[in-house]
Length: 311
Image (tube, rainbow, N blue to C red; front, side, top):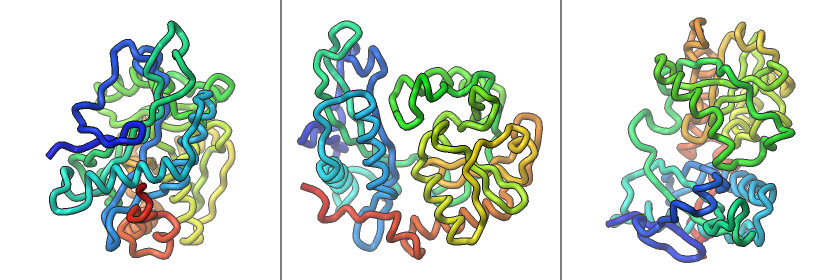
């Protein structure tokens, strides 16, 4: 049985969800998107951080001047319908979770440089996470390389805009880092301070405190929010402010976080080896694992059951 994708109000087979090579989303990289994790629970599939993810997606559509933008409730219902169709029941086309959910707003018709119409198409797709440790389990420490280029400044590309073209400049640095034996790259901002990785936030741990760069320079990562929430639960002090690069290179621990990585310890930064996972990383990993499994006090805040949300 083939997985299905939600497109503008209807579920279609995975193989039918195609766009033309000359579409605006392909030719100009103008699609906006958001990615979230779905997990199986006692009440069926739930999405981690559903409402903040959808709110961030709507903000991306607004920043790209897409119009009209579906209501938040409509987007949540589309996500629920797609996940339940693909992941719930004995005949579900996708194996047991966790699952990766991607929601996309895209212009499909181009009129030269501009889209033919400001009205976007909306897609929701679900896939398996693939090989690797289960979501919430600490993976092997990552090898992180400093990118030669700075992150695109906010004056050029707002950090809150998740648009496909925004990920292109760092792609070649990521490919080069992979060829050199690294797993990821981290970018500095134009002032030389810490920014973020290509698709992950980076948290610095020093002297028992977590330090994170401000949201005027980096994406408001939903899993980053959850980790700061977990830190508050654990009474670990946090500080959101510009992070000097020296603080990164001298950190006690470095923690990467994203939808797909959850909590990823950093074992190497360029030529420096760090003890990984460190004690705070382990504590954060334990909390996130419990949250995703629905057995933590924070689970109700971060997991939204999908049964009853679909249209």
